[in-house]
Amino acid sequence: MSLKFACFVTGTDTGVGKTLISSALLHGLSQAGLKTVGMKPLAAGAEMRDGGLDNDDVAALEGASSLSVPRELVVPYLLREPAAPHIAAALEHTAIDPQRLLTAYAQIAAQAEAVVVEGVGGFRVPLTDDFDTADLAKKLQLDVILVVGLRLGCLNHALLTAEAIAARGLRLAGWVANQIDPAMPHQQDNIDALRSRLSAPLLGIVPYMAQASAAVAAQYIDFHWTGVVPTEFSL
Image: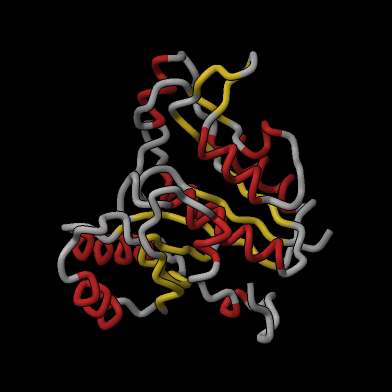
C-alpha cells in the first residue's frame, strides 16, 4: 500500500472536538475511495465493556476508518484514568515509550493510503517527563490540522498553538472552526479575527451538533486541500 496522505490533528484545548473532526476527515477520505486509518497514540478514560477496555474516541476513529488494523496499533496506550497521559500512566505503573508510538504509526502507514493521527488534549500535553505531544508530532513530521473550539478564550489558544506548531518546524496545513458553544456571542467576529491572523486556510466551520456525527461534520469541511481528493468530489 502506498501512503498518499497523513496529518496530525491537534486542538486549542481538550474537549474542542478533535475526535469529531478527525473522524470527519476519515469519513470524507474514505468516501473518496481511500483506505483510511485513524490513530490515537494515547487515550485516557477507558472503560471496561464486553470484557475489554474501550474508549469512545478510539471507537469513533475505528468506526470512521475504512481499513481495519489491530487495536494495539490504533491506540498503543489505552489508559483507564481520565487524566493527562503521564498521570494516568503513572497510576497504572506504565512507562510510555515514544518509540512504541512511532513504530505503531509506521506499521499503520505501511498498510493505509490515508492516516489521521489524533493528538491528546492540546498541542503540548506531557506524555513523559521529557516528551510531549508536540515532540510526537515533530517525530512523525506530519502536517498539522488545528481544531479551534469556538468558545471564550479561543483566539488566544489558537494563536499560541499556531506559534507552538511553527516553533517545532511543522506546517499548520489548515484549521477547522468547531461551534462547541452555540451560545457564544460574536462567533463570526472570532472566526474573522483568526482568518486574518493565521497563515493557514480555514478548512471549514462545523456547526454545533447535540449528537456528534462524523458524516454530517464532513459535509462542512473542504477536502480538496489534501491533494488526494478530486476537485469534483462532493459528499
